[in-house]
Image (cartoon, rainbow, N blue to C red; front, top):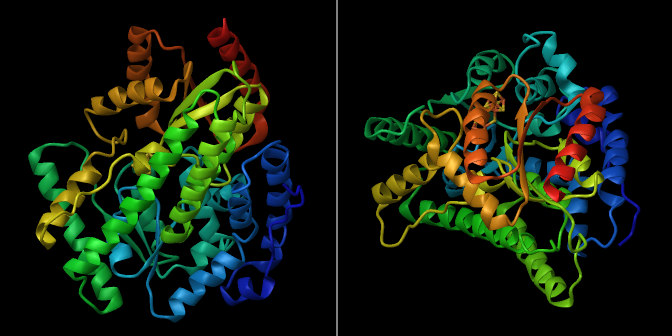
Length: 430
Ligand code: BJ8
């Protein structure tokens, strides 16, 4: 594989999106540098990773042009921040769904001019991208759909609305019958809002196709995750994290094809005994809050310390793709019901109680052949942070080595995290 890599620039395109071009010009070289260090420094990567490298090369250029082109065709472009926003409905309306969660330290200072400092870095990073006009995806969307999962998000949407039209879905915080009824109403309102935007009703056939497209994407990711569980692992955790991040901005059909191509290659590699990590490499599972692009900090530390990450129990991970929707013989109402129920299976820590998540973490630990769990909590995310207590208790009962860490996007705690991760690896190898 060629070691040359560059994140491309297109100042004219960015100017047309009313970006702060002068400032943004620094971003591609910085991302190039980080990507070279973290990804291109790996040896013996699967050949199909070249496609995902290219997706990063063209993240601010080619992919943005595709999105601008979709808008020119009258297709709605919708930004989201949570896997609870039903992508199937956007797909059914021939729309483009883009995950806008922020994973970069570079936009935090912009956000902190307005938002309090002591809130989640993911929310600050996303908000900072918009107020600083330093994210072409944010500049390209027609509107965004937020949700009421956590306090930081739901109050930030009120402010974000001053910069970009921001709609909010109410996500229930419990999973009783009455909560399901509320959620169905929210899903129906969402569908209506998207239909108004495109000026056309979503037909039964449209919804079925939208669901099938997303089912195919999620099943491809399930297949990939199963293959990566092989011991030894045929692909690194860094590459897996990257693919799961790209899932939030690539075209679903194209992405699905490429994931299957990668799976085919990984099957061959397994047969040939060609692995990303040598036999006996410590295997770590990561659980917790999502890692939005370009947040590669923890995986880089874990794999830099000689281990391999074999699973992400996260919304940029299994929570995004573990469940699909059955459409067989169903009417519009039946499909919406199934869709609603599928989304209610997402075990975000904003729900109470949320014991399904604890069971799911233990299950994924067993399925992935990991030897320990590192629970990752973004700073000031109270729900995941508190839920780590129950997770620790469950792991202690199940005799699973467990470590909880809280971090943000700054490089300041890297040394301390490295020390803790190394000590944890000694423990699981011991
Ligand atoms: S379904 S995990 S994508 S809300 S980390 S912003 S919760 S303070 S990201 Fe999430 Fe949907 Fe849940 Fe998944 Fe708030 Fe916590 Fe920050 Fe979070």
